[in-house]
Image (cartoon, rainbow, N blue to C red; front, side):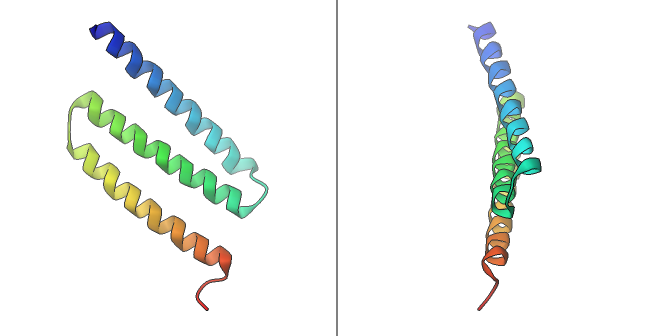
Length: 90
């Protein structure tokens, strides 16, 4: 059973890395600014999932706090960029 859990951790980590690579490709070749913002937001979500993965792997709950703060900062950044794209304050 222990080897199955290790295999699933490894497989999920590689899938997370593949999704990070695909988001990075979209960030580079995205035709519009909105596409790049969405790609960057998805990269932060994948980064948060990597932090949660590390919290599970090392069995440390402090990483979950880091992931929560990182998610909140990411959300505020995306909202700020979206307001800038839409034309700012009116």
